[in-house]
Length: 138
Image 1 (cartoon, one colour):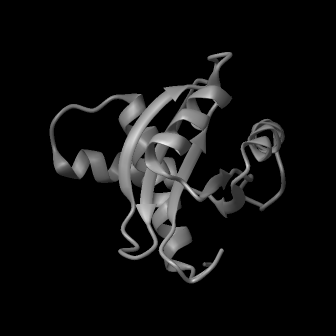
Image 2: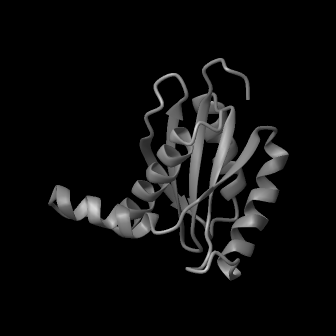
Image 3: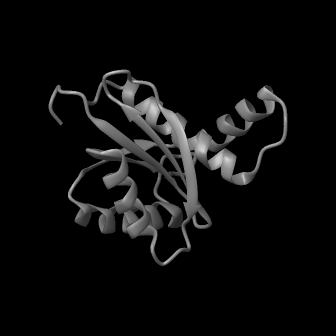
């Protein structure tokens, strides 16, 4: 990606839901967006629509690994979806998602109030994106 401001989408892909966050590289602040069903046959179409609606230039995909850093069945699942998303014509980046769901739930608990599993997924996507932005990979 160039040094010009870019709009970035982050995905925390799960087998049930995909949490989504968005950021502009000029501000480098990840913003929670929404969650969509990962089981939806139109998952790629939903992502394509978000790319168009939000003028997205790149996608950051949270890459799951086990505690030893090795790939898992979930890693394979995420890689398959990421490969499908390459057809959408935007750059795809991977970011380690270790413990993001745990951190996300801790944050939501600290805020008080009720939250759903979808809220955890959205917050996890926000953490993944913020980690990516702070890694100076752009």
